[in-house]
Image 1 (cartoon, rainbow, N blue to C red):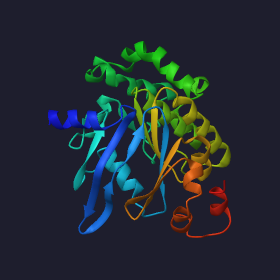
Image 2: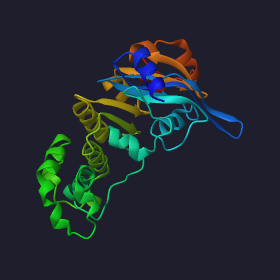
Image 3: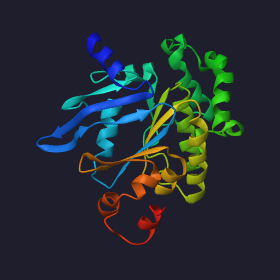
Image 4: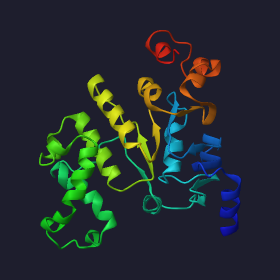
Length: 270
């Protein structure tokens, strides 16, 4: 195993934080993901996009270890994490968010972030201690909340937040785990225009000094903040490059957009 890791460190550019080699997932004869060679560069915002059924969600779940590949390998910082569990990669600094809200609605905004901060303290093992024992984490929690513009709402019950602010809180709890690589699953799903704009800017803000890989359907978001885009079709990589490069690719227009007119075509216009 060590020899294999050394070979990967030698072969891959040190700018590559996450890589796959021929990553494949088969479900009873159906190839959901096939021979994916993905490279995510350190310090960039990288989007994984594709039409429904393209395999992007399966690929994302493979990368974050919520399902296991049929074959192929996954490397994080040059280490083979193909057989690792989600908790193990989180400890290494690779942390994901979820498309479905995962906050604790009965707790305050501050308490939600404070719980996320427990991962790096021995307080996480002291289940019999009162919530007051976590007050030592308040300053760190407030610092994280300020990063996502929720500092003024720290004492509000999380369940009372508007939807867009709940997603911002999820971003805060992800940041609280101090990720080197943050993986976001449809971060603007179900949002109105104002919330999309706010969360998009928050993602750009928190991406400073870290790497972001996101599955995203909103081309306005992708075009606005992503450095690189991977387009998937039928479980394989169809195209990859900057937004301008993939938007100009006729294969992307024909396959991903299906030659449709109107909003979708305009979203790819450069």
